[in-house]
Amino acid sequence: MGHVEALRCRECGRRYAAVALHACDYCFGPLEVVYDYAAIAASVSWRRIAEGPPTMWRYADLLPADPAGAVDLGAGFTPLVRADRLAEALGLGELWLKDDTRNPTGSFKDRVVSVALTKARELGLKVAACASTGNLAHAVAAHAARAGMDSYVFIPSNLEQTKIVMTAVFGGRVIAVDGDYDDVNRLCAELASEHPDWAFVNVNVRPYYSEGSKTLAFEVAEQLGWQTPDHVVVPIASGSQLTKIAKGFRELATVGLLGADGPGGDGAVRISGAQATGCSPVAQAFATGADQVRPVKPSTIAKSLSIGNPADGIYALETVRSSGGAIESAADDEILEAIELLARTEGIFAETAGGVTIACLAKLARSGVVRSDERVVAYITGNGLKTVEALAGRAGPSATIRPRLEEFEELEELRGLEGLRGLEGAARRAVAGGHESEGAPR
Ligand SMILES: *Cc1c(COP(=O)(O)O)cnc(C)c1O
Ligand SMILES: [Zn+2]
Image (cartoon, rainbow, N blue to C red; front, side):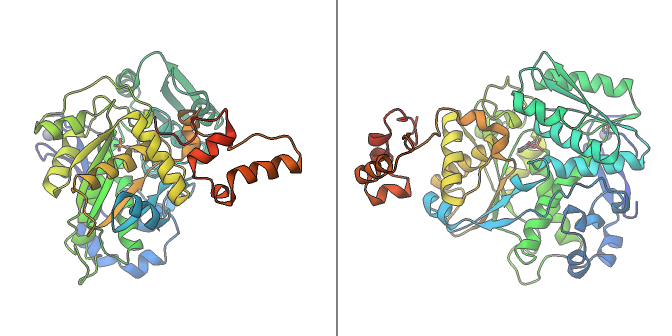
């Protein structure tokens, strides 16, 4: 396809043809897509993008696959919403939320999978496969169905029932493996060398897959009138998304798509990372000033971020450090409180990864890393319907009554009109009796 020149090793710089290959033969470094930016700059324009489809494929000039053959369920071009009520709660000024809960299967993984399977078909690969903690499984199974490809999705066997249903419904093969994500991933690395004709989206076609995350930067810039934000907060699992968001902003500057008089016309954006404390290898490396990321055993409700040995952790760490950001982590109860805060202030129900991002944003705001004079974007990468179990026992009815007018009116007299707005926990608990956990921080 047009503007891709080659794959290049991130470590030693050796070049390879743009095929299904992810690691350097010489140094085992990860491979990355290289483009002919001069050719892209000559053809791309704000107008050309605006005339494209209302999906991530409007940025096809900066993606490594041919949009004519796109495996497309409509991923991307999700809303960027101004979040004044949340900003006020966090003591911030201009805060925006990139609402990637709205993707076809409910997470940002639809972006990366759409690119990976489009490229896989171009390369003649017939089977889609992945190791997943849930969201990737949903995206691969759905996009494979759309493309008419066979699929094999490998998941840890302890995954929640709803996540298994949301994968299996698309008709591919779902293989539950007794082990954690890192075990499943290791198995897939072995399978990938046994089956070079399969597209393991995050293994042998990973260089293309990861490019899909750049669209999270492209869209934010376009939605801000072709300007970059000052500071973005991004959740970290493998670290790929964070690294590629940085690459996306830089590329916009390289090909001349940033407004000349806007702030950050050079594509420089402060980037901060967010992890769950129960799986925070990159946050720990940041905190201790280490230049290695030491693997951990994950134990957190934020399963979509539970990668104990993150493939791009070191690059995420370098990206954050060189941008002047920081990496925070949030404990499980802080994650749940942040999910509730986001829902109650902005009407967005995020999965646990979104809770991680907002909880870490709150900490970064408190410590002054994220400042109230900055234009801030927080990436909300997955939909709360995926992890409803996480909130079990915390969200319930304000009261339970029999279907009689008097009972409701009695209730309202007790509560007072103010109570109707529903946030006065004490008043509500006095009435509701059995629901004392509702709204109470734990
Ligand atoms: C996978 C995932 C991430 C992180 O992606 P990486 O590129 O692996 O760091 C963030 N949020 C959600 C909801 C995810 O599913
Ligand atoms: Zn190399």
